[in-house]
Length: 141
Image (cartoon, rainbow, N blue to C red; front, side, top):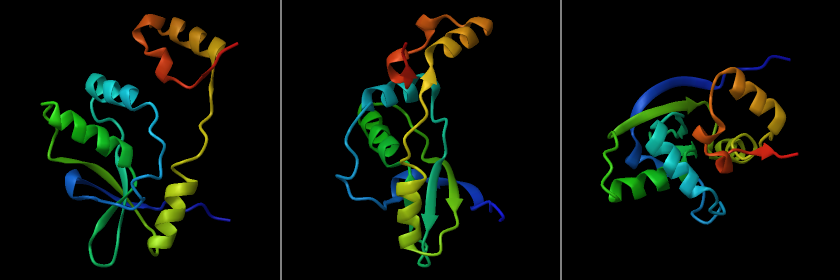
């Protein structure tokens, strides 16, 4: 079987014009403050994943929560670029886009092993205090 690359283009898009694919109440708010502090500290570092329908409307497959936080930051006086990077995913229809949103972008994430992480950042000469460890999905011993 062949694994296909389903991302067919990457483009800067006016992020405030992208529509929601998921209902507003789908996600349980969690880690929003960590996400906000990460955006402030590191900037926008992960492209939105979007789907464009046959009419040309663009929908978030991944990025709904970041958009909510970006809007809060905008209201707090932060300058945010008008256009942000989007990966366009090939989906045959809205049903497939919803399945991708649920099955690809909402998987349970792998936890980080505490010992391995500490050894790694030690080798790289990074002090543990430099990392907001509460925001990292670590399996503590």
